[in-house]
Image (cartoon, rainbow, N blue to C red; front, top):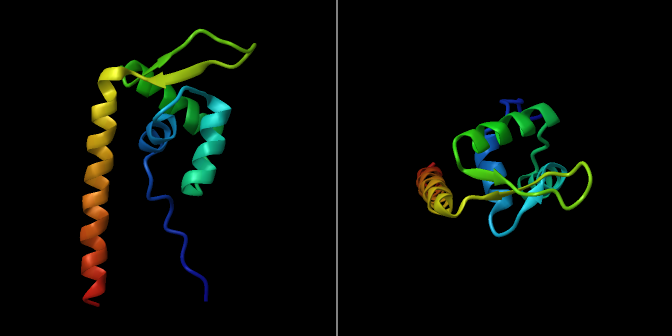
Length: 104
């Protein structure tokens, strides 16, 4: 008997920000990196909807296009701390969950 499909336990925004940590990327590169990094395939609507919200909130910014049709994005300098905090909170949560599983 296979495992039930409970949906994705991942927030596209955090996946996108983590993908962009350290360097600028365009949408397709972000999508491919997330699939490699997290084994999650974001649809284009999900990806670009989340990118628009991240840009609107000031977490990422669009850079001048270097290639036709590809808009590179990067984390805003002030928001690197936000991503670090979010990932640290996730790490703490995961460690707690794993400790609880160890007592099963």
